[in-house]
Image (cartoon, rainbow, N blue to C red; front, side, top):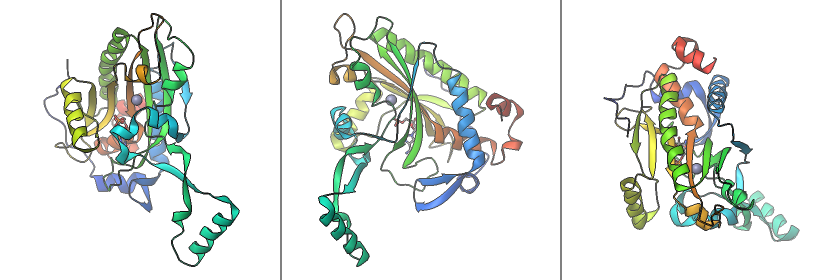
Length: 307
Ligand code: AMP
Ligand code: ZN
């Protein structure tokens, strides 16, 4: 069942007005400082989402960098090589480092002295949890639920206020049987809709695809929509015609179970699903919907957020 609402309401504040109110330019598209008011909304959203946490959920917070080997193993390079950011550092010993610095000081190119490290910038909050869970042995009968979060990076520079290179993601991850994961995702669709109602935002939940790389990727994306492996809760931020995905509900079947040899007590590969909250997109959507001054937001919304 998909919530198809009759139409999306036009945002009250323009993208430019929202940008000026909440973001502070750093000279790089999609990388912004954030105002105090904006951060208070992000924090309030985090509290609201925490209140929805299942009693059995384990909380794990990840840093903005992750193991490159893990991301390679998870298949990220096959699906989204264009979005990945890798951490590089000057290497090759003191002499080579000094020579790169000297080239920089002489106004020459120094970046050819950089070497790839064993780190990448975390592209989604849930990746590191799968090998961690797999390492604990068989998935218990009741399955597992994790509450994860991370600063995430995706190499998609843009001037759109809803497309950042560096943004925050919170996720509830369910690991278990096909039935446990499917039920979790279906329940979360309802709960997410209820959350969006409390936030007073106009939204729609629809089947979606990830931005897979290349021509083969486009086919994978179509298959994903057909099989309804991904839904998104979209909200008008820049326009009603191209609403913004603020939450996503992903079903990976047993991809991570197979990849990380994560099995149930019966030996079957575990299924996984995740509900992702784009914290920055949700905050931007609130400012776009209700205006740039929190004091003028509807009382019910401020009370839901305790603002
Ligand atoms: P995805 O893994 O693409 O479904 O991303 C999970 C959530 O992160 C999405 O539902 C968005 O809310 C958020 N998100 C994804 N990409 C960006 C971006 N470039 N800027 C801000 N938020 C994003
Ligand atoms: Zn995820």
